[in-house]
Length: 136
Image 1 (cartoon, rainbow, N blue to C red):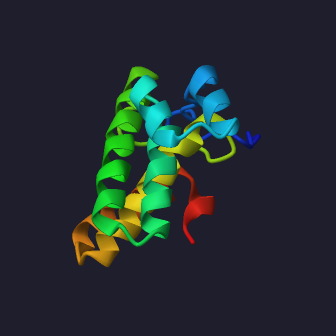
Image 2: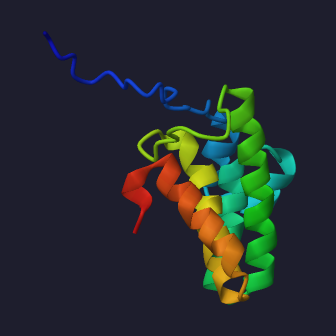
């Protein structure tokens, strides 16, 4: 009897790897205002993540929540378009996935800050499910 290593017998789907958005990514890397990038590339979760992170770091929790939720939903749409069925790995190691994962992270933080415990717990579990390395 031989054992095959590395094959998931439970049938977990392969990792979902989002395509990048080179124009939005280049604009953000060049220091363009994330609001301008989000307006020009509304599907780019990375732009919404940058807005959400800036808001939460600036103490604007409700604004952060709104930006993060927008990026989260844009990311869910992109994941579904790329074969994600609501579960399975979405690894942080794949750069284009990070905008979505950053939005989920800020959404969890903002939800916790406003006392929305159920949402904070759902987001934290989603992060764990997407990439166990994000559990912290």
